[in-house]
Image 1 (tube, rainbow, N blue to C red):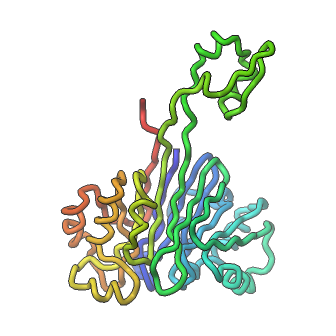
Image 2 (image 1 turned 60 degrees about the vertical axis):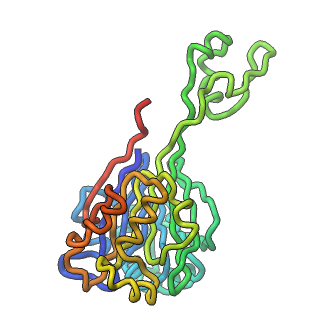
Image 3 (image 1 turned 90 degrees about the vertical axis):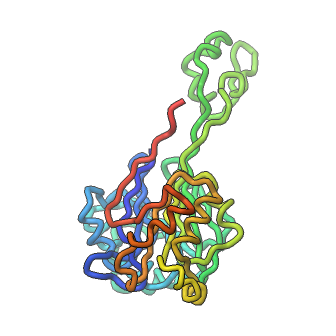
Length: 303
């Protein structure tokens, strides 16, 4: 399973009723924070999600509304008695920004590592998750991400028994290893079924639509995507500032055949995002307005 919790949906500045951009993912007890706008730890405290299991922080880009909450989050992790390392991923310049922010939180009980990405990378994360990054089109270097949890093929126990494979060797076959039984090499494909679909969450914010985005997020179970403006008449401003309107986000979701779309990163001037939701749903019926503390559990489909 992958649990998802949207902590903030605002762009540019926090509002009394709207926290800035932040998203939590949880898989097998490991928590990932995506973006970290000002006040993220406050919104986080309004959920039932703890802090100590957070070992990965992923930043889309280095504008303040996506990173200014980092010192507070790091301090909160320390207060939660985390001792294991924390790794921060982000675009070029992330190391310098993190170093500058660490000036006000210099002493932490856990090591912090920073890895800068250019787009195109695939990174293995804890809990078996795979992170992919894509360079997108904003006014500064910016990355979209997918988080994928693969699903192992079904293990055919009856076939394993027929081949005389001891139960003690089953886990090695399940992990893709060839085993030897009475002088015979038993490959994993002898007892494993066809590939099975995994789970994917995509996080795309602060970008114009790009030709690569639909393929990058294709078949994601959940796409969390910016919709800075709802009104189609704001498209020129969206182009100027490197953002999207609702209809553009919905078009990406439709082209990519995603399961669900959560719209987020709303302009402060967009006081009622729901008023424009029908425009997105005309293109992609499973579009929803993101709201703080909206949660979802994604589970492997039944077969």
